[in-house]
Image 1 (cartoon, helix red, strand yellow):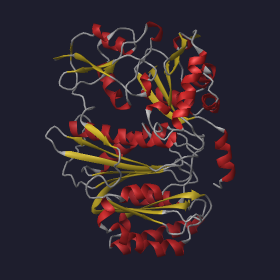
Image 2 (spheres, rainbow, N blue to C red):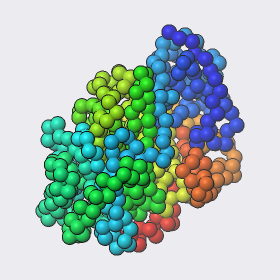
Image 3 (cartoon, helix red, strand yellow):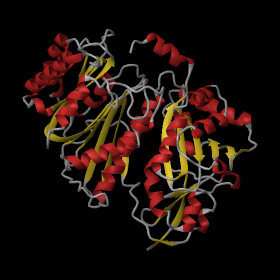
Image 4 (cartoon, rainbow, N blue to C red):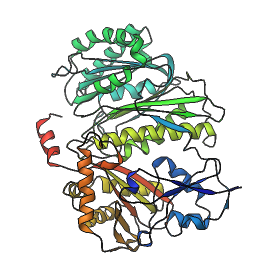
Length: 516
């Protein structure tokens, strides 16, 4: 039992864009939730940043707290004696210049092997001298590419340890038949020879044009050279950012980040990630490659569970154009260099710390992919609460984020709540329409299943300001270029997030000119 004390916390998230009000977080040492005063006409759950979500649910049994979650009571009326778990939201931080080489013991290199006609960097190597526990999440397409099939086979081996991942961009090595499988095997063997490791310790990933084989003469010639690069002193410092650039295709910006967390005894772990993706992005993995590293130690089953959970809350919740790729791959390596062992116990503090850190890092990469969607001007964030379960809430959020009509309305600066309601109605999730509430940023558009008066011109300005921020280098990738829909469908505990982007004229132009 502990007392809950409220302290002001000024939010800069898209949630409070346009509001001049304070949010509050409960603290007793370190508390587990964030609540806000909510105007009566906005009786909806004001959701905190994603890393807070699981803690809201744990506090829900307190009747008056559940009402605060619904925006029906001010925080001052919270009962001051509730049993809570320690919060973890202050136990980690982002290292925004970090990458896959930020965790201890990882190295990376990149180079131009001639696989791209442009001559840009097109080959990356991620390497750990320490053997790693590996995990993977892959495309659900029946036309899975050769490197996807190769990785699945490698990871299916019991207690398989991995040390290297070679990534090429330019050719997807998909729909290439048996020849593509042979190319993948030869590539892994070449990497293994140069690194003096087992071929079983090598994973592969490819992105680029479907139906094109990789020019093996160029690739095999480049392997010894990139291995030489990864042995240089700077491979653990700048190598990760260079690798993030080398895996890009139609991406405008590289996507990489890292985070670190401290255990109660002061020991530190780090998680790094890089990703690529801009088009052919849709839930259940999109045309994207992503790679996560950590210096924590754990069982392979624990790492796979953590990676799958984080993928479900990040990459499987983004959409750009509704298309799913043949090559979608998320690979994770854990080398144990930090000396921190993660037990296979979801209740342990160590497990919860790395779970939240990994999820936050991958969500950052997922939002970066959606924000960098082909022709996009804004990041679209859809928040759903009140569903019967988190899974249903996520399904509803994805349906809105993937709606071409909703995305086009955002691009057209049209606060069209009807398109949002229509998308929710066809999501395949039952809910009472009389409980439906929709808000666009600070503008309440619908309450109790009925439209409410709102300032249409101000709502259009909200959309226009976000688009302008997305084109400004100083405000790109900030809360300013984010358009938020907050939706409530009932009184249930389920909450979900999804991310997308607007649908612009440039999307058609880019994909008309680029061969997939």
